[in-house]
Length: 147
Image (cartoon, rainbow, N blue to C red; front, side, top):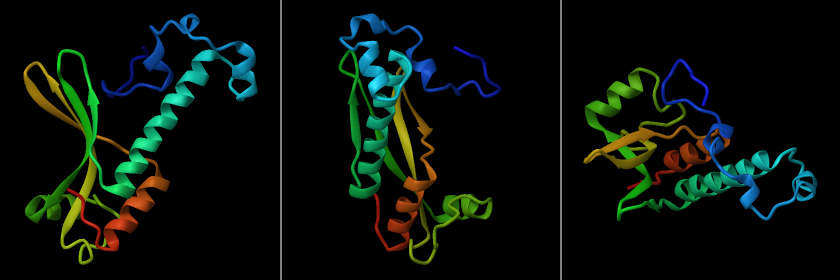
């Protein structure tokens, strides 16, 4: 994995550094037909499309997506609400650009990934594409509430 200035950054291809692509039943011919040069790029494109569909479902249908993990643990993607002083502080610093604070009833929303690490619950914000963000903010400006 490459080292970046921010310790939590990585590329899509970095996710599959230790993955055995020979165990897949995909041929190089199939990858080329799908306009990908290597098996790795093909697998990553399928994974990224699945993540896109999950984020789209969260944005459009207000769902929480639960990911089962080993050892009866789970992680989830969900929408976190910010209101009152926290919303005002984030809004004044440029957060939630595109949200009409009157239509949103002074609430802001962000997609988060929540997981358990060393006995504690951790959260990381998920940054979505501008296309998904436009849909997300349009829903919020129309009065949709996420929970």
